Length: 179
Image (cartoon, rainbow, N blue to C red; front, side, top):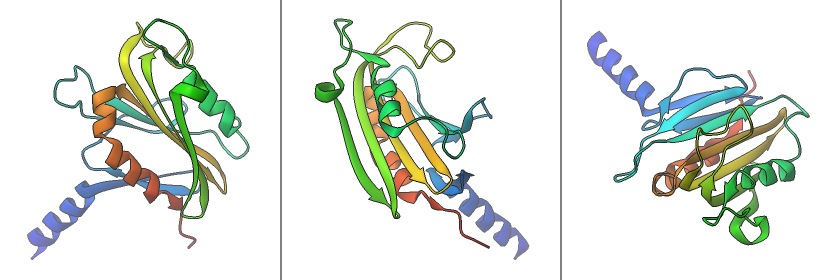
């Protein structure tokens, strides 16, 4: 009986990992591998490459504290500016990026989607070389203790294949239950 219970507990534990930051909790898909802690991140996940893609995608979760991290629109603009068109010109946020505002579990959520050549997230986070054929799917959840930023980047096919799991993760975000 103890062995059966142990197997059941392990099966449930491997099903989805629940994470927490900024007074919010979420459940990550079991197919996404939790990565070691990194500076400025609440969590990082490796999203397995789709068949035919040469590399995995990454979901980075950021939490900077209440009133920190900048305005939602400024973050969306920053994320979009990390992409270029195939000809090297900047992506036009109004034409080339999709954004949407909605409510999830009573909280404002802004989602963004952009694709092209990924040039990185600043001097410390830029890839070693521009990466054509990449996509970003992001969500900013405005929680009671500040915003959580979910940023999925990787090869377009892999990010598209992770769309349903990304959506489930966003829909799982909710305030931590009060004890």
